[in-house]
Amino acid sequence: MDGVAAWVKFLQRDDLGESEGMVALRQLDRVNITIEMLQQTKVAKIVKAFSARFSESTVGATAQRLFAKWRAYFAKQAAEAKAKPLRKARAGLAKSKPEPSVPEAERCLALEAPGQQCQNRRQLPQLLCPTHQAMNQADRLPYGLHLGGKIGAKKSKTKDSGLDIPPKSPGPPGSANPSNPSSHVKPMACPSDAKPLLEAMRAASTENSRLDTLAALDKSPKHCMLQFIQDGGLEVLERWLRKSPDARLTCLKVLQKLPVALPNLQKANLIPAVEAIQEQESSAQAAAVLERWRSAGFLSETHRAAGPAAAAGSPEEAEAMAEAFGEPSSKRLKTDKDHPTSRKELDSLQKPAASGPGPEPFLVEPEAEPLPPGPQHLQHPQPRTPPLTHLPAARPEDIPEELQGLDPRIALVLMQNPDMLQFLRKHPSVLQDLDSEKIANICRLYKNARESNQALGTSDATGCTVTVSNLDPDISEADIVHLLSDVGLTATRVNLPRESRRKRPCGTAFVVLQTREQAQLAAQRLDGFVLLGSRITVEFVDDGLPKPQPPGSRRVTWKPDDELWEIVVFSRSETVETLGRRVQMGDFYTSSDAPGQRKHSRGGFEAAMKVELALEKKHAPQALAGGVSPAD
Picture 1 (cartoon, rainbow, N blue to C red):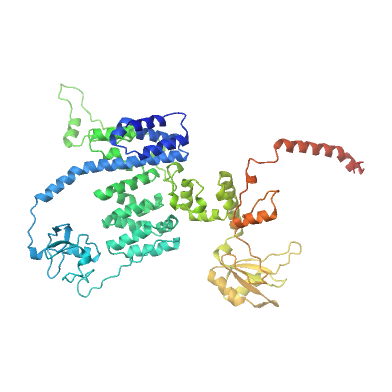
Picture 2: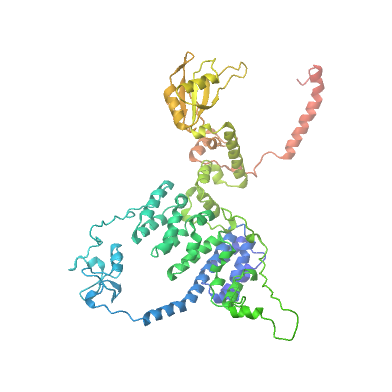
């Protein structure tokens, strides 16, 4: 307790730096905080205020995660304390009910616990009850069988015993034993593996097969999980959360690793499914998932009921917990004492006083509590990406090698956007020295290139363009349109470049057709056709992507726009051999590129400009008069 109080005072210092605050947060993270510590030291309230002070740095995000961890932990403790009396009452009720006696010869041979045989009836000649038959088919008899009075025989010994119990029952006559579609499911290695894994999850019919697919998903890298979400994987997890109790805990653990966004959660209706979980073994994990989504900004104030103050049993506990976590009074949950709950209390409020004659009593409607001002109560759509200060950082083992030097939160954003990461990989100099100026420059170049491509048209992008070359100099657009109509094709646009001076065709035309199939058909039918005495060449432009040309080809191919920016700026003191080695090694950053090492200053430039103006003023009259200066 004294150590926690000392660290609390340390965090309250005004001159505290980020490195010192990080040390204090790490020490607090190692301490097992109790409810008494929270209420006496107000450590959660101080950590929350510290995260607000350093909201734009890594130490602020660490403080926010520590606060969320304590909040989820004590919500779990309060929920368990509240549900404990109910479980005891249910257990006492179950013991009070008389159990129907089943003869020993008709009882199920499965063991429900070490030394405890199942009390259910089996249908002869079956050896197990229907419940344990289903578990036997899924290879899930953890305590084995009761064999001839010997308790504790494991299922693996059934082959040596005198009983003929196969590992998987064949089922009723005429029914086939379906194969397990997920017995050979492997983790995803690339985004294209998301669809086979999703098909295996949809085809899983047993609890064992569902757990196998979830294990494969848990071992997959994060850059593949985004494609899994886009293909509809969250809908499958939502259905399993509602209908598969055995796979529910594993689903919740996997959900904590998925890079989800608010539209994905709303489309799959996952938030209500997680909030509806009430089992003791899964409720703590569900609370942790909800707290993670809440810290990312996905849950509004209406979902605060899952917090520690709401999970507390009595109004006094709720008030104390809210005070410990530093919540304002407007955000605390209303208790039963704040509002009348019975009809009798409502009637007592509406009855007039039994005094003498007076004015007619009137009913005063209870005034609704005004919402506290703030942007969280405005009906604005939730952003797709949470604020950087509340974004959980990526785990070090999941970060690729080229992103190791970046902030873990920035690395997580790049890992959740594969297109952005693939684009930045083509610019190693930007990844090695990431700053706002370089990012703005890349965005400006990419925006200009996209606008220029849109101005030129989308013919190359859609794959509906053919090039017609070796045309006659007297050709016209109408001749090309008639040629296409003769073979049953319709041209959407014909572009015939001409010379700037004589306005004669350059011998090559670009024709846009309606569909890709028509463009391919035009290249097949018209290639080698003789038009106005010239044998023309028709080539299909395939999506504007550069193709390897055969040796001797004279066709010009261009690189994509993002590859045209791959340039290296070298210093004057660097040799050609050094530059070549640096390009081969991928080292695009040199010490001379630092912005602080500029050789030219503004004062020197202005002095040089003044000297040049003075010389020009001196020699300009002589040059205009046609004279020659002695200096020449």
